[in-house]
Image (cartoon, rainbow, N blue to C red; front, side, top):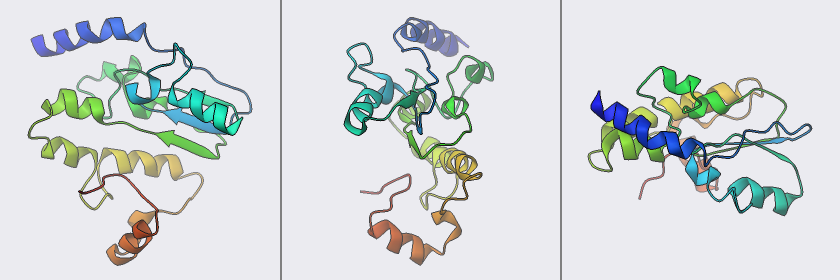
Length: 169
């Protein structure tokens, strides 16, 4: 209980650092994720700012500092601290997604993380919280799904540059 209280006390000041979630009319790119996406927003050098400048296309940016995939408390999603809650269905050409840094940092303290990592994404990249979330996002579009293919085909396609999820060293 003390650990949760300290975590919430630590995160409260960070909420003020995150930029406001915007809904840009006509935007075909959605960006969701954690502080890796949301940092540098104050200087207009966040990931969404750079993508927007390079492509000349508007972006809906829902990234928030401190979010996780694996929430310890049910209220986390209501407070906007769950990456999956950032997603809103709509006509999108692209969804840019990152996450799991806070899950690993706060979930296992960067040591003995195999259990947390396996809950996030399995070694074959087809099970876990992240693949389930990606499958839900893709469901309406029926985009190609590597997890529905035999292992040999998945590896061949991954070798051609199609990357999904967890990469092994």
